[in-house]
Length: 109
View: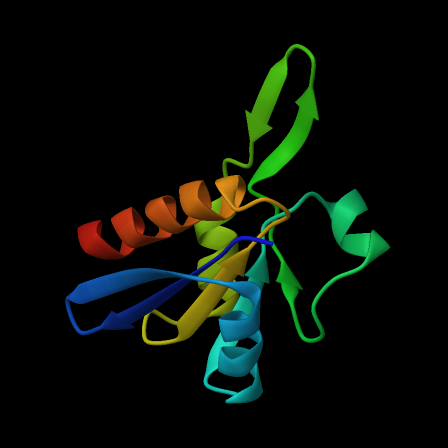
């Protein structure tokens, strides 16, 4: 599982990659929210306790990937800019893309 942490403090956001064990420790501290960016079908098969599912992609098929055009707004509806987040998926690819979008959104608003 790939995970990224993103915390926003004032105007500056920091992003750090963490391994699954570190992610578990951060979640246990109850100071982080967890955004699972996998598609709904994968989330329903199993997920981290307390995770909120906001899919980064709406569909993935041989013809391509359809990004969720409301991803940033959906995360913003669940968390404030001051919240610390763990963003995860199965392999780490989507979580990195999703975190980059979230950091960019915080930087421009």
